[in-house]
Amino acid sequence: MGESLQRILVPIDGSQTADRAVGVAIGLGRRHKAELVFCMSVNHAVATAECATPYGAINPIPLLNALDDAARETVLEAKKRAQDAGVAAATVLLDGPPAGAVVTYAESRPFDAIVMGTQGKRGLERFLLGSTAEGVLRSTSIPTFVVHPGPDAAPPAFGRILVAVDDSDPSSAAQAFAYRLASVDASRVFLCNVVESTVLESNSRLPGYGNTPFVEHLRGGRAALEKAREDARALGIDADTVKVEGQAADRLLWAAQSLGVDLIAIGTHGRSGLKRLIIGSVAESVVRRSSIPVLVVRVATAAALPASGRRGGRTEGSKREIPAPAR
Image 1 (cartoon, rainbow, N blue to C red):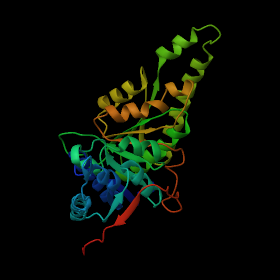
Image 2: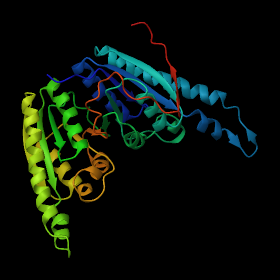
Image 3: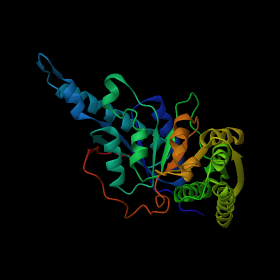
Image 4: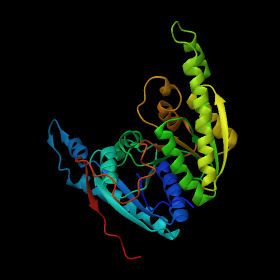
């Protein structure tokens, strides 16, 4: 049995997409017996600046109080929803640019994962969380579930998981974290390797290039798939291998739809050269275009780190704890 998640951060903003993320988080919390921490960021500096006019400054205090009250109400509603489902929950308000505030808080506490939506609110409510998923994904080393807008409720469990596989450390980390989920959920795992054959074959015809990188990549992909399947079997996880050709993001999304999976797991970092064509740089495209939740693991060791003894925080952003009402 794999290690279960213990503490999950859930940034929210009151939007429909955030509501779906809360559903995913509650499902994870129930199955893993994890504590959920719902947070919301109010950017006081931006809100105060908006009160300045060419004719003089307007007192920002009423606006700030209204924003804080709205944020407090939103996180407390999410907390009640979790507790009604039998999941332990806490709340916190953050202050500062949303992505920075979320990452600062997340990495200064022992969180195993982040669950958040991709789309926030606009207008006056942009002072709240807003659309910060991209900023969080580019900054945090904590595995992050990204939930997309949709008319349907979030999946209650991840019964079928597609894992993008190559020979990189981020891919290995995504596999390890996906196996943690699969061990708890008894999920069926599909290990998918993409060969961008058109690009590789085209490059192989260039003078002085040769076909050695192409052949080596094919061998590497097969070896990575076999190792990933062996690792899964050692944990008692039902895993199948899938090898597809084409543009990486397109084929991963196609495979996810064809196999009817509930989650796509992908590792990423800022790679360059030949390996960039296979998996690393496509995570952002998959996140933007997927209609199902995507798990992004950005740092190779993120999946293996225990909840205790994790990173220190950065300097930007601050927090304000909300006392929890009696249960």
